[in-house]
Image 1 (spheres, rainbow, N blue to C red):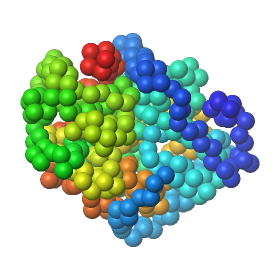
Image 2 (tube, rainbow, N blue to C red):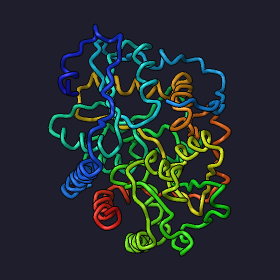
Image 3 (cartoon, rainbow, N blue to C red):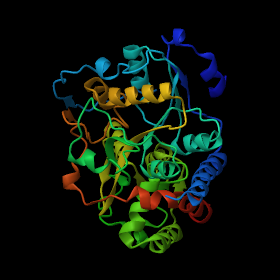
Length: 396
């Protein structure tokens, strides 16, 4: 049954079993690229018209501070109407199913999860523009949210009150409060096999050296949400769009391999197809935990990557209220614990931004890294064109 039919056929009485629409497995890489690029192109057009299986090792450890006086259930309790309508969540986070299950259990709100890659979710949102089918979007990278915000598609002026943000978290909140940061990772880290590579690159420019010809792999930003902020970060620190395009063209000339997502790129590394994999650091650390010979390096500079939630401004007031409850649930101690435990070798390996939450020891502090934070409101409107250019000129 498709998502639209599920949405209209599920009633509050059916709330005991959260609905999950799982990732689409049969969509080819080419079709995913076209769909994702088309979605972002649609966003750009809108802006032009706007005025403004195997056994796993022991999981990494983390702790959280004692809970605050407000319980997660209390933080998520309805403040206005007691009527419960289906809340539809589009998400690309490894812990999203665990969060949805716990939220529905705590609140009784019938919640449906559509879990897929960021590019596919944006394509779906674009296709549904005249008849929105989502209530809340939760992915990595703020650029797409900045573009959606500039089209008037997001609820503004809201931030959760069930938890407070540390200074890093406060830096991720936009001035109009149109999206909600939930954590931070690094958009581009280099993973390598220490038994093969003894001296990994310490700067991005070193990837252009003949020593790394045909040895580097990365994701296509049109398919992988966390990759566009990496691309934008490279462009920003090199001085702009044209300088960044030149870098990636040179990288292609040096034999760059382009894959779809973190998992595919890292599998190519493990299989020996490449020697260096540029991926989100949460995925990098997770793979390294499973394969001790893999190590993670952070060249200067690396892009800060927030995970972000946005609430659809075009759905009913009741669903908007429930989406706000969900955001408060995520900021609660129970929600933070689920973020830390729901995907122990992937998205749970993030830097917390909610006060009282302590991340995994395997995740480096930003203070130890040279970082850059691309402005999402500068690069978000350019994302469609850059992703199309990358797909046409670099990925092919």
